[in-house]
Image 1 (tube, rainbow, N blue to C red):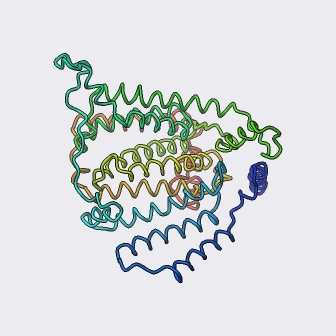
Image 2: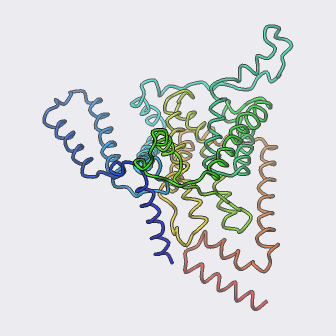
Image 3: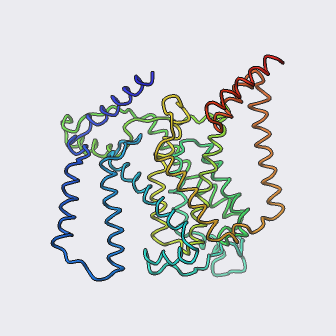
Length: 435
């Protein structure tokens, strides 16, 4: 069964490549890349005079090492679930994920002072403590005391983060492909901002900035536009024709434009309440999403990076490109665990990167992280966790009493190795029969 499925997937992948224009350009070109790389290294070794600047040589050597690794990965790494616009594009971002994770590990193993000063090697302007902007203050929507512009509070909030929020949630919707999960993550993050505003000043926003500007306007419109795009992608016919088989120039241009759309479409049906395994997986996805969102703000805070710095933007671009692949691999792993026996490589790296970023935050500024949460906020989160645990027990262990053994097997399959799991399931069956 697995062999047949594997061959079927191979046929689909080959078919997707054969129907694309310029199939020669679709190849990995391993020998060509190796030849060009060798020529460049020979030129640097024999013809170029090495500068005497140690700092410059160090930076150039690190960049050259990364580029050589990227050349190897783009030509030799395993393909992921996406093939458009080109498989090498997604292999490139997989290798960038490895480089970024190694960079984070290096930063994690430095002292706090050395880690912050190390950022100066990337940009000399970094390594200096920066004040955080406070978004709180006067929260009047209409300020009658300001005769010049009573709506100044609203215009002050209309900065570059408004379109960034909209675009971000549009892309997140395309990644998650589920309205409910997107709305839950959007609302939960606003609750997190309320809960952690005593740690980061820029979490302190006006109530209408949280719920009207963010949730309803920016995030809500982004999610709505994303769902409309998902609807179009799900209804779009996926019948591809080679570029040279299209007679008209208009058709050729249209075919080239559609090269940047998916080859086929998979509608995500998360079904979190169907079984315990999927429920825990969806909770884990939501948790990792929220943690990655928080890392954006905390990393800027502990590494002293201004919000408008290009490294912050590059990190967001990175997650945009790797997030879709990671989510597809997670969905495949959840939906068909018999065929996908292990978590995908990009999903594994994204999870490792998110955890490593959080560990850097914990190490570099534990004092901020350990600031006591207000008692009222703690009570609210405790109540929420109790409600989730209670619903989990009721839905999967009490409501379906006949399926209790099966649910226990699903639960322990996430935690225990196979021999222990089989022994525990056998014990549960014996107890069930004796009762």
